[in-house]
Length: 415
Image (cartoon, rainbow, N blue to C red; front, side, top):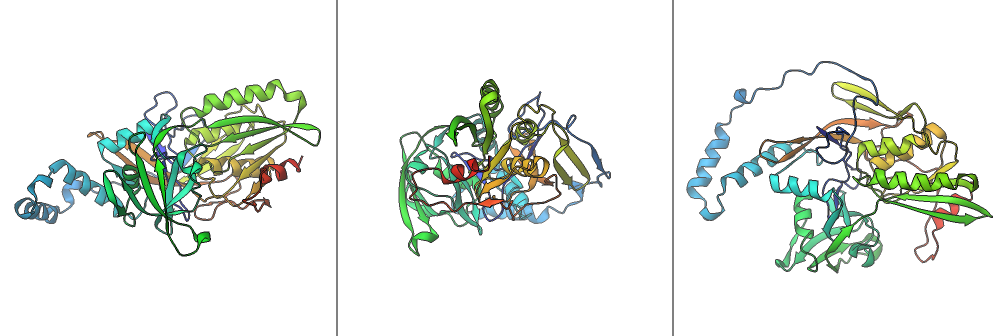
């Protein structure tokens, strides 16, 4: 069983690496991995709650109207070639789930579900955009480092109004698209071109087009560099997502830091533009700074659960500050908030995205997938940051013309 913590405040997310599903936190069994975003329920906390009420039996629901409409469509629809029963059932299932009005509760048909799982394994053909919604309009949460989108100058918050490519040269309005539809439309074969019509508030009232050549996106989720400032050495460790490769990459970075621990004056944990990922990845990384106690709490319909530190604490004695911005969401907000609440780390940069719900991911008998919002998560201090984000302790206004990392420079002054 997998649980997802998907992202949404002003922007509602999935990952479009083009990838789907990365603005979520999934919970899963660490031993029997069934997909992305996992958490081990048996070792991280206590659960309390009431017994679930009995579900409504499908046999008690009147489906006559559904079958009546089905019959009319089968008998009268103009183009019989489009009457694929399985596609119609998939559409009906998706419609039932979307009727709840929650963009993170969704049905993925088998092909989409398979692709989602493959995407989260780490390599993709796309343009490197993390997608969401801003005021219900398809939008860029953040471009991935080194991706075609970043190289083309696409920015967080850009609205995606229209998408065109070789298969659809005239393009299509994206105003009513689901995240799955957006993924299908923007992804494509390596070397092919997709043209996005974007709107950027800072550019005034005129939309503009950007043509992107799709490429393979392989994302290294953890990057470590040692920087010198004020005659001291600091570890600057960036986490760009919480994926399947993150734990191994994180462990390697921690090992490097520990080998230089005698000369390390502090750590800057950089979670800017990190859209989230594996729920257990957040617990694992936070546990290296917080040796014991609660890291995050989950409040569900029937149960409440505290997720505690795994007790590693390998970096617990090194002073740490955290960089965040509007692209920091979900798992990265869990880590940032936990370090703020538990060990007093300062958050530096700009307010985070604001994503605070958890989804249970179920594999269905037809190969499809169902994501259902089951809970909200709270920071150790009790804050539910959904739609609000986490405010920073030190706000840094970035000059787009600057040639240095102003946020990192400001953080180093705190040591």
